[in-house]
Image (cartoon, rainbow, N blue to C red):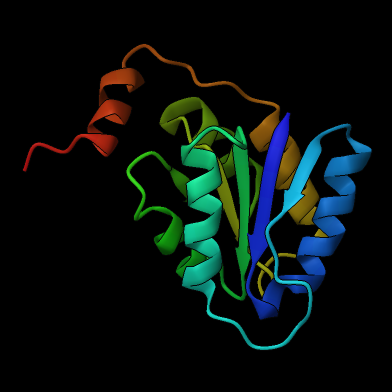
Length: 145
């Protein structure tokens, strides 16, 4: 799979560890930055990640910041992206099965490396269930306000 990964400065170390983990699993990984822990703005990296997932350059994305909240909001501004903020494997699995999430978001200050790996395994190891969830997911990208 082609997976893009991006973070802010607070999650640069977790990003590096997860990038290596994904490569070990055999995935092609695009690291969208940043490269250092110098202060950056999470929306810039969330938008960049959303863009490559939306245009199909990457099949899935991993979005990281201190809490995971800010970058997940930024990614979700793109109607083609469904970022799910998770902190444990069950939520990660359900994000794929029920919500067809194409981006997983986590907080480096809240989620350790072993739990983050378990979340990625659950996320990538599950498929969208379709069925009754399909029309609901369609509404996420095409709201009828």
